Image (cartoon, rainbow over all chains, first blue to last red; front, side, top):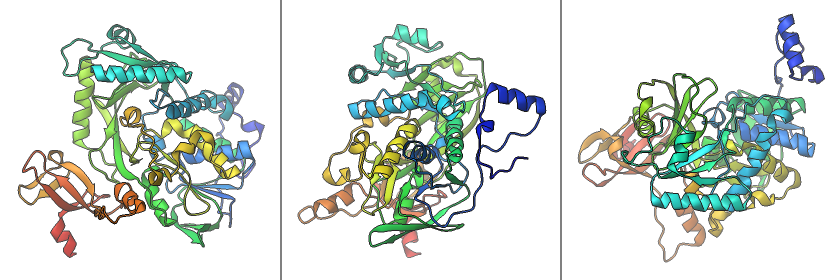
Length: 425
Length: 85
């Protein structure tokens, strides 16, 4: 058994040779990250061990050389929204700000496996957003043109192309919402969301970041408008910088620092079917029917929907969701009727009034937020982490995220992404 | 599924209702400052626990009602009873 305190060296690099060596020897793989006691103080404390928190910790260490960083996670790494989303990546947003932002995220995702030395199983299989009315077809055209102007590959396609891309799709005029066309976005795809979390965690740990699981934040000490430390169920930590990356619980965490956020927590449910042979090679989304479908590498079909009709902190599944998602999927692909659902789950989304995130400083010095990611936070993990790391290291807000400050709700400069983000993806 | 106690129709499935969210008192528009309006429009307590909130019985009596709901457990009580606690 290797000493878990040992700094990981090149020997821990994952490779075909390492796989063969471990396979022949039959010995256990070393843990991907270590357990630590709490230090009395850290330069930066990140609350929330999901993709946003871990990516920020990783980029703080890699891009800015700040390694005296703690990530606090009240449960296990990736147990919140990072492990509950439907793992879809895309950058076909409506506003140029949104397109540029998510395109940067896709670029980072693209080289993540090599960079982190961790197979994140990114599959660029194309993303199809269906249009069921003339007006939504017009919006698709608009999005396609904005995308192209920003250098992102998107095109409006007709029902014939939809049939070619997606077998079993009902493109007749029979359904209540016939398919008139779609926005086809070839760079979109799916990724293994747990692997992204584990990859960032392992790479951050290797550079000296402390990952503290089962460590719940119980208080934030603020003196004269400045953060001085945090209290946890394992003890107090002195720090001058706290970053809140906690999704559904973000307003509660901000409340500990005395900061109020314009967010409301809603559950978002998803479900998977039993595995079947691979047939669905693209991600299919219908905004009108509030459903999105993709097939995993295991063959299961993943179904997602919009958030629940009322706010809640409950992660229990509901019968109404299953009824709704099943009927909507069957309107698109009637031949899926014999499939059975294997399981369903819910994740908590912190929804903002304008469906855009809140990033950057707050009125409390040293208390920063990367929250309000609602139903679309996973795909932004890398770019949000990169931007927040820059924000912490330089003390200034990067241009890419300057539109997403908390002060926009006072100045009235909201970022209207509802058109492209309100439906999950 | 949760049941909403409608004072006029009795306990009914939440699917019959529209969700109005937590109740935020409306400030007087003649005297409210822009900050006050921001608070009223956007800021919410978003509590994990008991919340007083508005629902609209759109598939029933079509009237607005107030209930207390626990946002963690899903338990719902009529507002009057909860206020007395």
